[in-house]
Image 1: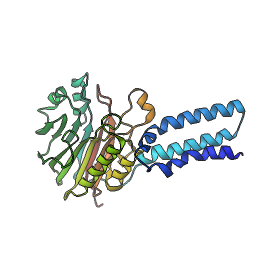
Image 2 (image 1 turned 120 degrees about the vertical axis):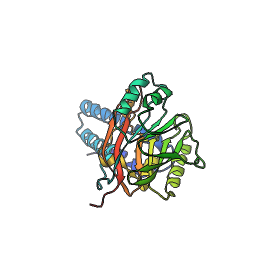
Image 3 (image 1 turned 60 degrees about the vertical axis):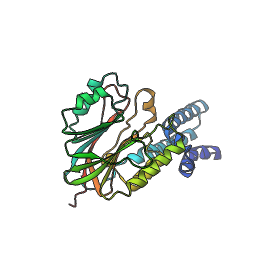
Image 4 (image 1 turned 120 degrees about the horizontal axis):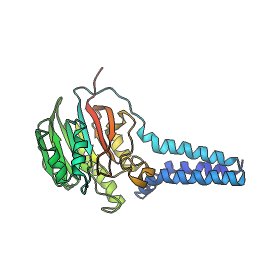
Length: 296
């Protein structure tokens, strides 16, 4: 077996040495599935045309790397079932949704106790009003709840279009919901500014005196630095099962992007996570049952 083949087979694994070096690695993280698929195709063609069995080593290495890089952040995390739980739905119906009535029906079909929607057009809001006794709608961010809620003062350093902080009296007592719609790092802000946004959000949430749920459209891949920062301090509730990609329309499906999340304080757990379609939206919605971790 040639040294060149061994080097090519080992090359993808260098990602784990450099993935935390600078915000620009976030672009690489997004492209990993496409890069791996393209590389495996090239290796297979090379093996067939050159009749080199060593191509199998390269393909096997790429397949193993794909499994670790793409699926490891989605492996179920275990943990006990939640006590006094409620159903939370987080969704991005899309600001220019061409079928808002259908989107509203899809959201209502989830039977959420708390529904957090970002980029929510007025026609979707109209379809949800009257269903929930409590709601806050402002700056294209909306929270609908079966439990009493009230807004809190704006978080220092955050626009209300990016983060809404809501106090909710849940079935086990009060908690804070951070509804998040992160600026888009491809055209709204730089990658470095986006990572700084996630760091600041994490730091603020860690100072809260009561349980926190952080849900919404984070515009970050679960292969990136921002995700690892959040998952190191909070529970990724969707990993009560196998979370699916949430931004997968058209060619984006190839990138296997999960950019919508529900994070909770470590003392809370989740169960029955689900991903569902929203008519007219380029995002999938997410739903999960959450609450304080049971002690049994």
